[in-house]
Image (cartoon, rainbow, N blue to C red; front, side, top):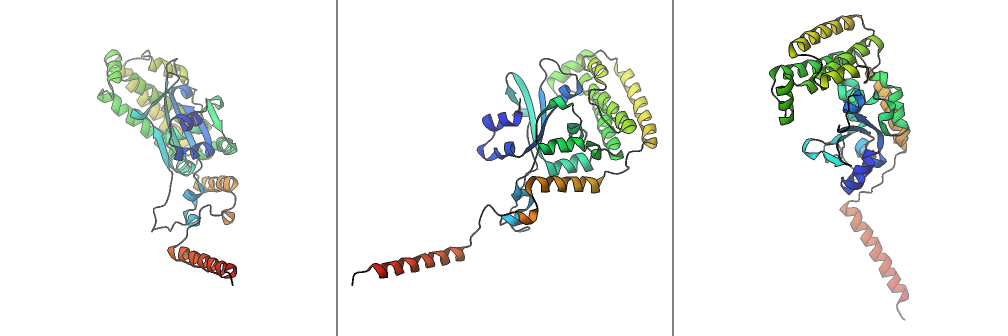
Length: 307
């Protein structure tokens, strides 16, 4: 199913239909991407969007930087209380500008966004040439910074798990049954596994640890004491791997910048050739046009007047 197409047709406002035309990549993530879904699992969808020309070059469309309110698109999401049901399945979806994507995934190594380019190909529900180009260049988004970011996310999840404070009524029932939030626990396991993969092979298979993740998600992995002990050991092992890793120490800013610039130029053409699609006319221009029209009318009236 092409989710953006459905949302443009059934859910979004008419002025948001441009998201469909500018869609670069649409991918299913979440439990489906990790191989842990069940027949009732929600769909988590992330879409990368090319901004409109006026978002990229506002000065070419009559806007003055620092004076006007500049049109921009960074991110739109329908999650939480805005979650949508399609064919009896809940769908959470977000659209993110490719500019914002490069910043958050490439420079800040946000785990969920980095994963967009590493999900199995069959989970790509829509893609343009640019989308496949991004996937072909996905290793540019990996650096030692990803190790630190992924580790931070895993450690933060562990802190929440230790408090045993449920984030929802449903999670409270899970904690009461298993002694801790096993759904959050499986996210810790997959993040640590992804860390080990990127440090050793500079690649990420999101389904690599699916069997262990399923055990955790279903409450069959073990108790909290064992989980904490194993987590500490695995994170210590990851620290050792990080010291030996050949990953670039810092994000590949120059390479990412060139890739993004090439993508934008390929999509829209050379910025020097861009033309305004909207004309902005001042009041004085309007008055001048009216005066010219009046002169033409008067001249016509004079020529057609009877002698």
